[in-house]
Length: 456
Figure 1: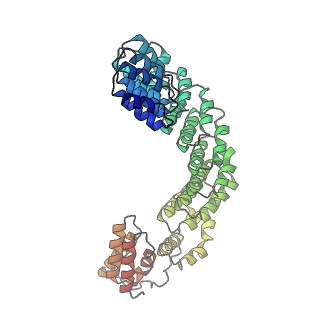
Figure 2 (figure 1 turned 30 degrees about the vertical axis):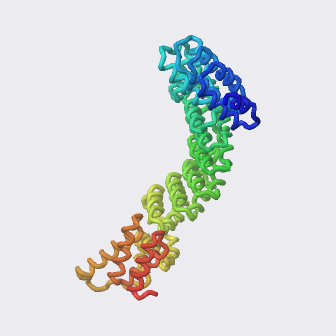
Figure 3 (figure 1 turned 90 degrees about the vertical axis):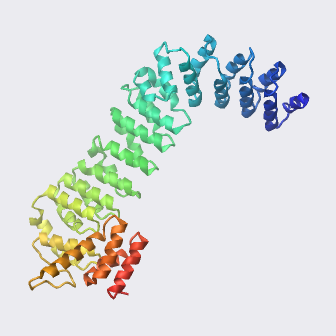
């Protein structure tokens, strides 16, 4: 049987060699240990791992020596197997190897070595050992707190295969007040992992060195939209006027979040070209982008934006209307008295014919603010005294129509069903809009409600 096992160790098939190693592990003889020592130098990594693991199970005077020898293996799996098999840490030789293993380029090996050292009476005698112990424990910010001595060890962690460790290393380096960390952070900007790149942007921004704008500007053209957004937000903390042209170009970015970030960043760029670009962005297809543009126009305070913002008061989305109203007040609390607003009365009257009920309501409200009281098409002005019952009916109808735009699908469903039961023709428009609701139940309820109103 032993002869067959030894023959398998010579097989060209690494799996057969690995099985032979497992068989030798059960023998617990000096000869078996010698064969395992040779197998620990096998060309196949998994055979070497199996051999080192098997050696750790032998109670022999050579065991420790063979395990310590395995720490020189080029593959981290083998080194991890060796450190995992160490049981005695009292000898000075073992401790020296474990302290050296704290600097291993594999996090698992470092972590296991740190745990073994902590179980003994060993304590770091030098600052560099203390840095590496903190890194091995995964406490990278603690290592960074020890100062510039942690820079090179943390830079080595940037080469780790684990993205989470690279991110932690970048964040830790960014907390060290030393200009030498900038080079490492700039290199991290080129990482193919977006999380590492984002961390580098944040660290460089917080460091705020003289070359930060130069280092981060190329990120505005990164192929990952998340990186472009982070770069915009970071650069907005510096001289925006210098970057206004680049931000204006990004208002045409294909990704809405990039356009939104660019619109927000331009709040500090007070020049005619920027105002023109933001006014055009009030017609962006994305609600958040339109809100960001309106907010920036309000902060810039250029009176030329009054007209476009007045039109934004008739936006189909309530959030845009709310932000536009706030922006107008920032620019001119008396905006309704301005010539720019008065010129828009014809356009606002045209909006009363919109197929969107919310647009019609918003247009009527703006016209009222401008002193142009209008009755919406299809609705007769009440010339008679409205009875209390009729007044209550109007209030109920208005409440349900408002609920048709609520974010809660259950409330929209209940409102659609209630409007169908009320049977008021004025509910047709919001119910027609609800036919395209994202919630299938709301769409069905709107269809049934319209049928009750005689709309096929």
